[in-house]
Image (cartoon, rainbow, N blue to C red):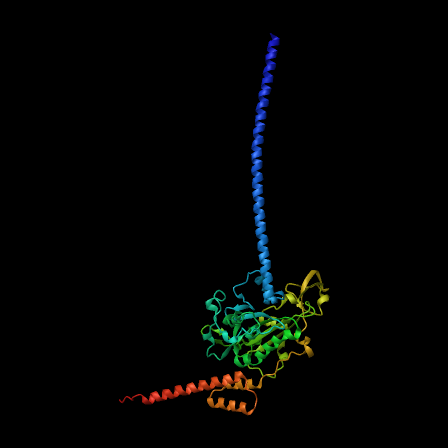
Length: 455
């Protein structure tokens, strides 16, 4: 009996163990299947995520390559970017993150002063040994409004502002620099009124300034390397008239800024014009030369030496608030003495210790050699003025037809070749006074033929 009971107990235990084992194995199998499904799902998600990451990486690489290619083309189109735009704006241009005042055209880059309705500066590059393109003609270009999207309408100048103002529409980048361009559009873009034009004294524009432009245009042929130019207007103080009565306050007044504005849009007339010139070195790319000229916006005697208007670049930077060709002028050093002899000044936010040492390498602004000093004989010399043009200036200033005829006779008696511009000026003036005389005669005739009303 006891044996039978014991056997039953043992049988029950075995059965229970077997059942438990079965249940456990079932749970394990189920958990395994569940984990397998989760693992496969995780693997799929990981694979999908990996593919998504690869797609994003590929897109990033493609975008990066596009940016690199775009930047490369920009540098090829405007090599001045390699040496620096004013105030390091090349960093924005290269990244297509330019402020609304900066505009990039086919052959030049400009910044517009919205308040003054003129450019602040215009930058371009001139190359050596480039023949003129016979398909490009200035006669096919005309002064016109800036293209849509460049200058907001309220900040534009117009031809109406200049007409009968007494001022020329003066190019900052001269049209003559673009006769070598590939297409007419490049020349046309220099005629945008707000991006490249300022009110300029007529004698200055047609005389001394024109000869300066010719001098700069010939530089690449003399140096055998590209020349980079930044041109712009300045509005500088002159004399002191409206002084305070208080002597202490009066002593603080160092000058007054006075200049006209013209037209309905109140285009500001600059007191001066500047050119900053960086000439590459054909034998050493790391050894460019630099110079700057500051010309008053007024008639300049034709025999005035050009170097009389040469100014230190630092001085021009202080007057204009612009930093020029920073990429070409910055050098990195740890000891100030290393660059002290040739350095203009410390770069912004760089201060040396008393022993002229720096805790880490810093940037310094180098004084580059003058372009003029590297020319043959160390001269920056303008070509001689065509004597016929002096008569043109006098004809343009004449106020009567008798005065025009007198100047023209003096020109003929001088037995010098008549410049085309002088001949055109004479014909325009004669036509103008002839038209005025006919208008006056018609007015007198009308008054004489009008019936008188008797009271």
